[in-house]
Image (cartoon, rainbow, N blue to C red; front, side, top):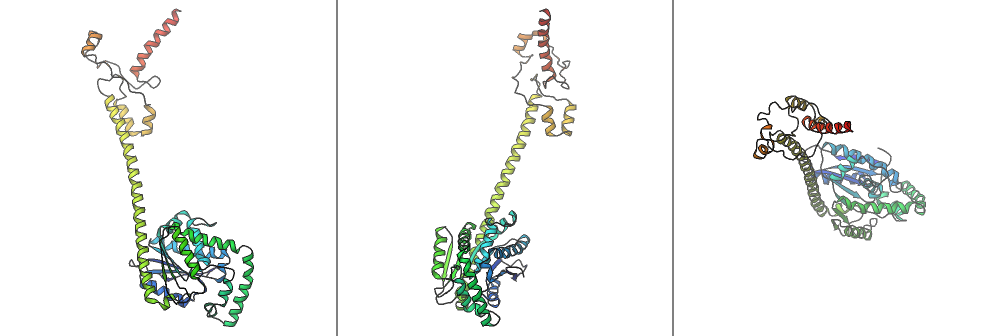
Length: 404
């Protein structure tokens, strides 16, 4: 028990045969014993039931509806974190205004108070359907009086006359809200219900023209707006049944419509999970591609080093055993710091070729083992042999300056 109503599990089984979770949103217009009939219906179809039963005042005080919504979502999250499964919302009578629309605002991130990002995303991924029974109800200026006089209120436990008197008194006091902020709350309520189309879940609406609280004209307008927004919606019109008694008067048709819809919602859930899995798989492929490019870059550097170590290149990179030992123990970052990148050096002339014999003749020694090509030292990041060649040139310049 908490401020705003109660949250409890109508059925909670851990069996793998459980197909999903039905979240029932109820208001005072439906008695708990009557609500248990719906719990039994969904249980017979293989679904667990999480029930939210809101107080009468929640429809008029959004902070109470928000409080109940948070308690409900936290309870649902604890179960989904253990085992993800399809989740379907079922709304009775005025419950969308007393709790459910606040749940939508929380998980869609449009309200002032929100769950953590991971929790909201988990619920959105599992949410796959909405069922409205004798709902939604338009909270017009005279609705509170209608509920105060409605038989469903008078049948509540307690002295009927006293309860009816209290209900009328509360209704008269709430009339003042319509002159201030209630109309803005009403607009927010309908806007949120329409925005639930973004959750990409199908709708099932069970209604009747004889419903004196959930007006058929209001429901028809609601259906038309959802269709204009691209919603997948099915309407089951049951003739002659009063408010919240469609299942009582048409049990076979009601059960068939609900069972078919739950199968459809389950299909939506698994298709969504499959798409999410494919998206994650694509992300993994991209990561593998990046890693492959990194490996290719490393192999390219190694192949360049092997080419530079060829006997025909006079400007090859360090290749002593001491350098290779240090490279194996050091990191790639250290290697890049010790060996700065330089532009490719044009291919040198082979001293023992035909052109080499013409240019250098016998001045080029046949045995190159005596050449000093150590690379332990460098001048300004250049190899020692290259630096030594530049040093001779600089020495000539200095000699010219000395003569001047």
